[in-house]
Image (tube, helix red, strand yellow):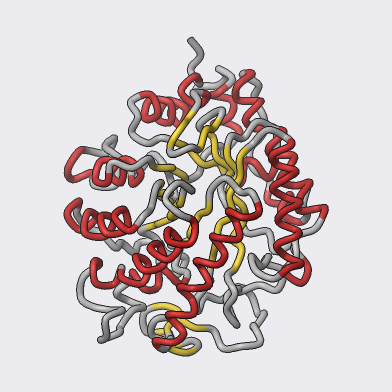
Length: 367
């Protein structure tokens, strides 16, 4: 029995069948001119599918709002031209033997570089971060229109032949800005003192998406405790708070929780089950009973990948991953930057070949 066998078990849930447990994590590339994915984007995803990934989650693709992206070449998931481009992408991925879903996104009031959208950025309370104003506070009409835009995007994903749709609710972007007490200061029904109160916007997005795609199309929700604005931020300090956060989202129609950590091996509540205790995805699975995806720093070092090939002494990342997957702490593992540098990362792991880690220079182009 190979040390990596746990990664290569098939996965089936709600009509979604994957050949293995490896997911390509969403990664912003900002390389869709005018927001329209073209042949280069299709080839980029096709190569990772050909390299053995079971499920590909696209880079964040933005909903139909006036200022839903924070860089000029982030792809749209609305409009005939962009959707035709995504149809070519998903067909290429399917032809190479993988499943795929778009990550549906609104960047809220976040900023990336000096680029400015044509319309003012929007957020729950006109804040980029606690105490840092940016943009406008969303009105009731803005909120309703945004919820409807998420639902239309999910319905378009289903119509185009994608296998799943993922809602981006993490990392300090719009949905997460509603979750976070530091950026949601609203006194109406979209805010409140508890994480359950501040989850209403996300719950309504999930409900609208579920109504748009029906009961059988898998819906994934990506969440994080940390924010790009504050790596130490936490929405749930206890399992009880996490249940108050995740329970309503599960009830609203989330099928799979994609739980983002900076390091997948970090215990979420070490004060309860120790430093080797359940990670975020493990607790989410325990609390909701739903499948989960874990993600965070998988395969970023040469030492980590050498450990897969039985080389070198630093095998602890491999040990931690396979041990957690063997005991079904979480169901799927997402790999990000390692797949940018090595499209065949999955095949290399399965064959026991060591490959290098992530090279930041590879971000310069789609390859």
